[in-house]
Length: 163
Image (cartoon, rainbow, N blue to C red; front, side, top):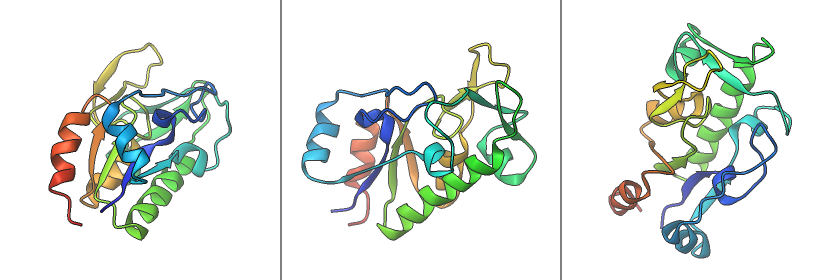
């Protein structure tokens, strides 16, 4: 069966910017994990960022714009982290290609992993429609991305994922 890429933080790994996880207790994920179908991955750590690290948001766009060079990922301290986010996204894509992964479950609102929503770049907690850098790159390469709130949709898509 095909594997599924999953944000490592959703599986309990303490890799988020604040050194914590977003552990998701979900029966489907538990079954997939027991069947060794999940590949946990944190693109921010893979891109060279530390744990913990200052919060980051995408300024003037979303992940697609970061990849295109028209937007940036910036820390709350003002550091441009775009290169690290792009590097991590490319490592995620390489992992997906290596394992023929066609589906990913990613942490919503993240500047890397947001599949449907990201923060607006003002560090005020405002969310906007858009994708994080990794989600955007995966989508660009026909890998379907879902958030942790879309597990049922992912189950339906997984049934249609080429084996």
